[in-house]
Amino acid sequence: MELDIAPVGDRWELLDELEGLWPEFMTKDPTSSLYYLHYEKFWPDFVLVAVDREDGRAVAVAHSVPISFAGSIADGMPETGWDWVVRTAVHDRFSGTSPTIVSALEISIRRDRRGGGISARMLAAMRDNAARHGFTDLVAPVRPSAKTAQITKPIDAYAYETRADGLPVDPWLRVHVRAGGRIVNVAHQSMVITGTLEQWRSWTGLPFTENGPVEVPGALTPVQCDVAQNSAVYVEPNVWVHHRI
Image 1: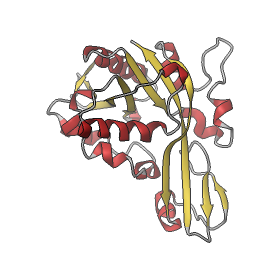
Image 2: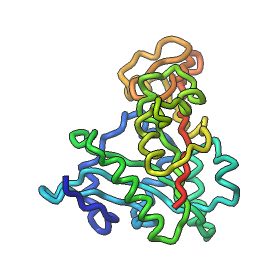
Image 3: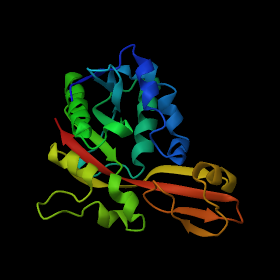
């Protein structure tokens, strides 16, 4: 497949074809609006879109942001993962703090084009884009894609499982490691999504009528339901990966 992968520029309408690719509950993280309300203005050079040369349609999008980080990546990245990246990026913009690294946020691929190696190409483009802007480190709070099929397995075990060839069992982590990434640590509270039981019913189509864990399709861990409090909470773990560019 011939793809053109480049910063989105003024072609924002291309991204309309890439909406609705995530489970609805995943769009309810309250921190996410800090990024998606501002990314066109603040970080357009870090939004990469892949376009099929044959039909001119968008195939995939990659979002990343430059952020400041004063510590040693090898010593571990923050437990609050994805949410921390977004808050830090916005804080840096408004405070005038100079970024020191780039963090990936999302790679989304059209459903009819998945499974063809596009994820690896988008990751490579994201690495190249970070280098083009003068950065030598790319980090990513990776959402391990196959963890949804092992929703009750502890993330600390799943994140480090490997195949006979030494590569991660998880296919998305495997793409990162093949590209030169190194698993650093688990971000146990990378996203926190809360809602009333009625909201969770509308997001998932599930009843949410009993206390305790609820296995929601597309989630990496069970959602915790509290009937008395009329509330359910999803705490998503991600896996920090570091790419030295």
